[in-house]
Length: 133
Image (cartoon, rainbow, N blue to C red; front, side, top):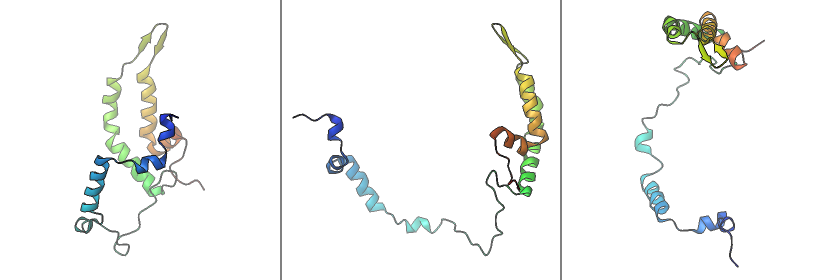
């Protein structure tokens, strides 16, 4: 009786199969570690008593200070480049019977982002940046 390939690939059959490449890789891992003590000593660890606690950074739970920082960063780092961005977008695109105005669409979205970055992002993704009370 011949078995189909799917019937021969059981977890037990795969575990019992001999794969010389896998065996050499496993041997190399066994020889090198873990533990990697000589490297792990350079990995930084948290020292709670020396650091101030981080403000809440998860979207939807952002602290008001974090929202203000995000808004300031966005306005300072993205705002100055928006006129150049808008000029690079075609004013209209015509395809057959349809004419689109991508520059106008992008101008509205970018204008909202520059005016209120975090709340606009929250509206676009469907979740406000801070915890609602």
